[in-house]
Length: 257
Image (cartoon, rainbow, N blue to C red):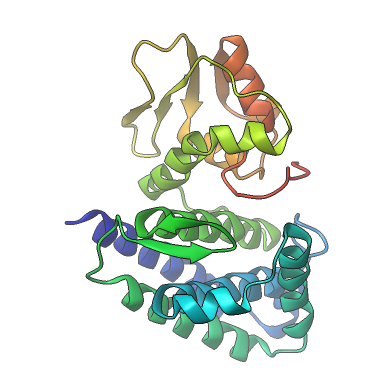
């Protein structure tokens, strides 16, 4: 199985998990406030659906995408915020259909492509593998918000490795976002997967190491859990500092939990 096939398979499974939960909701449940205030359940879904549509445009019509892309982070953030406003009055049935059909279209658009090919986005261009990993991370994180808001435990699966991997890869971005100098020592992860397997990422010689539950680390790097409340142990000043500022997403620092 190729890298893109692996990512598509896991993203489809992650999507199906969320869609199954959403399909059983009544209309009032879609208006449940999530921990990412002021976003409600329906706002989480419209954000994911809009991102999928934008990804398809960037992948299949890059010149058109670039011609319509706002310039500057403030303009991009305003566009993202406006999506929530525009979708506010959509029915739950229409929102679910938008997300379900759009996700299928997006995954079909990636099928058979080279994971190293590049595509434009709101910021630097990305490899297709990086873009799919980012779509997985967003689905996982916003899906967690939905499960949590509705009083359900999000299933813990080894698919979370994509979020953990991206969190570590995004370490330089976290430091840049916080206006901090990038440390000269790497961080290594030695975390336990939901299946019980040990995942090791980063140089074996690194002295700064994060150990503990992979699921909790994924929550920390998506800023769904404060590092102080996570089942994690950091050895070394850099590892400790990184856990406090980690973010697997691009853009300015998040407010955390």
